[in-house]
Image (cartoon, rainbow, N blue to C red; front, side, top):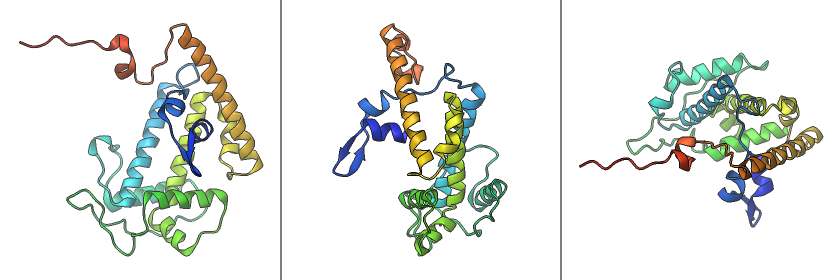
Length: 233
C-alpha cells in the first residue's frame, strides 16, 4: 500500500501526505475474487498481530491480552521465542540476546534507560530500511538492531508482504519487491504492482457503478445493514 499512497497522495514540502479520500478510499483491497482464502485471511491477520506484539515488546509497551496469540508468551520469554523463530528462518546467527526495555509505567509509557533511549518506532524502521538498502549500519543503528530485534521485525514484514501478494494472486512479484529499494528489479516490480492496482481499481469502480460494492467492513460501512434499533421504554 506504500507504493499506492506515494503515487496517489499529496506532499507537504518534501514529505508525502496520506489522504483518506484519495489513498485509502480508492485502494482496492484483496478479496475472494482475487484469491483471498479464509486461510490466507487468517495468516495475514496473525502476521499483522505478531508485528504489533513484537514492536510493543521491544519498545516496552503493554500488550493487549485479547489480541495476543495464546501461543505467544510475554516479557523475556516472548523475546526469546522471537529469537528462536528468527534463527530457524535465516542462515546467519541470531543477534545477541539482550533484555527488553523496562516495564511500562503506570501511565502506560515505556521506561527509559541509557540502553533503550534511542529505541523508538521510527528508529526501528529506519534501521530496517538501511538493512533493505544494504547499507552498513552505524554503531547506534547496530545497537538498535540488536536491542530492537530488527531482524525479527524484518522477517515478519517480509512474510506479511508475501502473504498479501498471494491474496491478490500476484505471488510472481514477491522476490522482486523484496529486493533492495532502488534496484532495477524492485523498481520494475513496483511499477508493475501499481499498474495492476490501477487496473483492479478500475474494475472495482465499474462494479460499483452497477451497484456492487465490495465493502471492507460490511457491518460498519454498508448502509443496507445499518438500521435503528427500537427504543426501549
